[in-house]
Length: 266
Image (cartoon, rainbow, N blue to C red; front, side):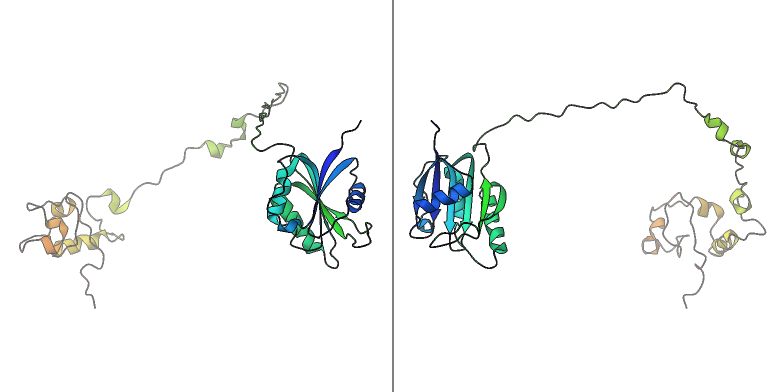
């Protein structure tokens, strides 16, 4: 004896004949089942069934708002793991938007693999079906746990051919590459203590400006201060400071003057 499966058939209409439920389920490939019918299901908040108690749910609707997101959640509650839900519509005209809406609702309710079904061949005396949406409840229960298998580590092997000819890196160098580079010889004022006679780098002009201010070479090369404020600028210098009129500098470091230091501002 084959055990019959339990099917819940719901509708937003006042009446849903048992013969119509049997016909639709047979067309959908479901046989040997015991139907449980609920009419005007759009007014129900919770179905009077236990969780995971039915094998399939059939919803037949004439309006676009049924089944709602809450009703789809009830379908998921009462269905057994791996159960199937069928949402059949009797709407005419443009049905693409409604198909997408129902697929979204069943997906948000936790169902998997939503599929569109063409049900125009199923006709009754009072109504005719246009399309349907089929989806499946996951085969696991809430709170189930699964062991994750770690993928096996794959070690890459490098096969070295001993007979392979290797190129000597030194043979790639030319005679020009082996020559030692010649460093440029320093010349001009950079190698002398004072500016040279034919100075073109501007050092002679700077030294000339320093002489006009009355500063010695030692005061320029290694500035010192008895009060400690000479390097801060004129605002901190006394009236007899030898560095008065010069820009701020660091004690012990050479005082540098800009080329336009002694030039008029206008």
